[in-house]
Length: 437
Ligand code: SF4
Image (tube, rainbow, N blue to C red; front, side, top):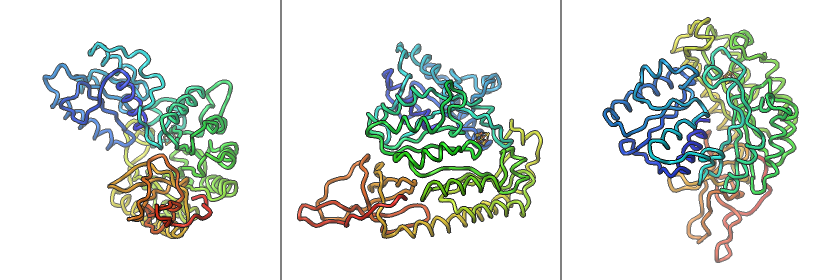
């Protein structure tokens, strides 16, 4: 979400006539985009802001702006601590940054932000569709900082998607803290399935994804849309956060482990070969070894393709920080995370190894350390090796190619590019039927 916000603001600055620079010392405007989902992230942001203040001391020409989740509805404390910041902009409300920059530099920001799509967006790009969250899980600061759920209009989102595709985007991820609740606050009512249907019509777009979902909002309609719309990738990030029902109730997640597993079973039954990923917190307030083991039971039962694991940490401002104790020892949290990570490494290694020798469809996203890389529909990171000496045409970001997987690790796959005829008629790899991976 923050990356997407930064790209949007950056595009607004470009539209106004600014250039970007990595050199903070020479910048006329410095914008710090903050994530404060964890206390440590907020501490990092405030530390950096302090250093920026020192480095900018005495330079009255330079404008400093702060945006993102650090900027809550009440900013008096922030303004007192950091008096040298010129603008505080709440998440997604960054017009004031452009307005002040425009005033200081004699540039008109009118119209520069609306539909601010990057000039050269990545082949795989993001579109925020719903901001904020109404769920109020006890450990989470998001609803307090990003506010209540606020869905963007379908017209705006589809228009933005069209502009992105016109600029070369092939893979769009629809974003929301709670993306599957999209549209419940719009009239007439619309949902994520309806939105994906409309985006699906855009010529030139190849893939649609979305994240992150809440199990209680993952409706049959959405599951059917994933199954029935060819461009929607067969993947869902469905956080379960804990496997024990008492812990889930204390987190105020609104489901039991049994209900979660029922949802997973329904998804697996309806979407063949679906990729499931999840989020998990270890060491939440009062979590015993037996309760943690119930999280492992879910991991073993589902065998997720990826697990984003966090050690629970006290987060000031949340319900848990006021009413519960952060009483699981740090070493115990770490050990639990290691247990999860080791299990996941085993699962991912095992699953990826089964793909060696198979042909997979990959959307090339760019180059890293001189090698092409891309992703499968199921979000597998794949590095592509082009056989030497065949004088084959260069592949580019944005091309979809069928590749043969030659090697695997728990985190990525290696592949060779097939179907490319060398000038002398030799072919790198033969073409085969491509499964959904
Ligand atoms: S659903 Fe997600 S964003 Fe919303 S409160 Fe819970 S953890 Fe936070």
